[in-house]
Amino acid sequence: MALITVVLAWGLTWPVNKVVLATLSPIWAVSLRSAIATIALFSLQAASGRLTLPPRGDLPVLISITLLHMVGFNLLASWGLGLVPTGRTVVLAHTTPLWVTPAAAFLLHEPLTPRRVVGVVVGLTGLVSLFNPLTFDWSDHRVVLGRRPASCTSGPTGGAPLRSCSFRGRRCSPP
Image 1 (cartoon, rainbow, N blue to C red):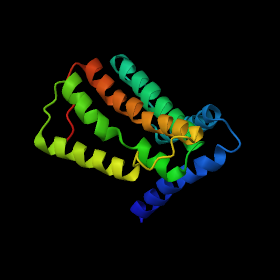
Image 2: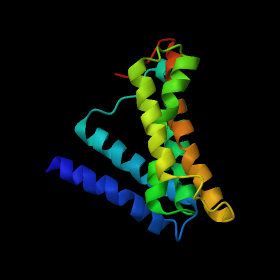
Image 3: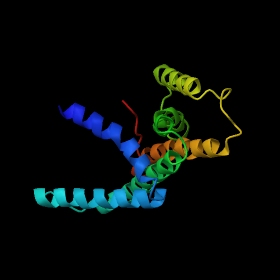
Image 4: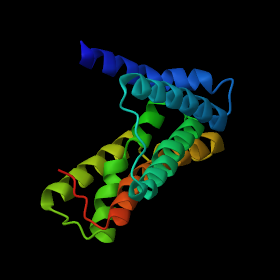
């Protein structure tokens, strides 16, 4: 039952956000969503008696994740969602592993194993098949512009863990 609830909640988030963007700009929609989430999570932690301040050494990691992932991802995804169909925005927004794997290899010197290379190649092949550039209407500037922010969401999302690892001075390797 919990899995069904999560799938439905997450699946409905994108179409609901598209409706919200009909009345609010992306920055206001993200700000409102973030404020509600902050108040709700703060209240839950306070009510459970588990509210604590993070250690001072964790602040750079928290700030980078907040700015890159929470703000950057949501703002770019909302901007793209206002310009292109919901399904395409969702797929483009969640391509982070395709870019983090090579970035971790080059920036953090993570091993680029054959399994990871196959995963990236298969993922990129899937993207090309879904967004065939040969059938894309390049004259529709609104759609071309709308795919850019949705595509760029993986940068901030992927940058947050990479940046966190550099703050920590350690390697972060995916499972």
